[in-house]
Length: 231
Image (cartoon, rainbow, N blue to C red; front, side, top):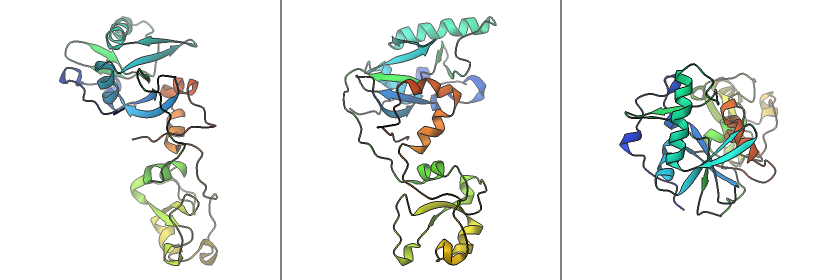
């Protein structure tokens, strides 16, 4: 099933709580059997809801309920009204999308109504996943850097047959990368902060699960057998 969907102009936000856009938050997607299969942004999630291809799964006090777009909008407006009156509106980590005529809470979990497939267990080797695996730290000096100041280093240099694989690439700051050059860490007198390995699940998913606003995802995430690409 194609995931792409376009959100109508009516839902384009003027602003979201906290000053950011709630449409950029992440949504965990389940297949029809409630198995986690994907992560998308809120904009695409609303597109699926409006086309009646999915429903919202909302967890509160250990219980979960199913909502279509209209019922989720109504529940959201009630929560927003309570919040405006200074009362507790439920999820203190909620993201909101505000349109001209109404305010709607960004869903955290979506269930596809006509999709049963399960993704292959794999984690793509790309810059985002690599930087997430290494926690944004240089694997030689152990210091944290912005991604713009990190580079990718081949432990066994590619010029000497080193392959671009999970167990042979690490994040390195420019200074350490230049110091190491075309040598192995041993030849350069440098030590790896930790041994590079293939992650068992998406490193970016692990980062998301560390954020309190995505705590509800844990109900559907089994780290033993599935991983997901975040896009």
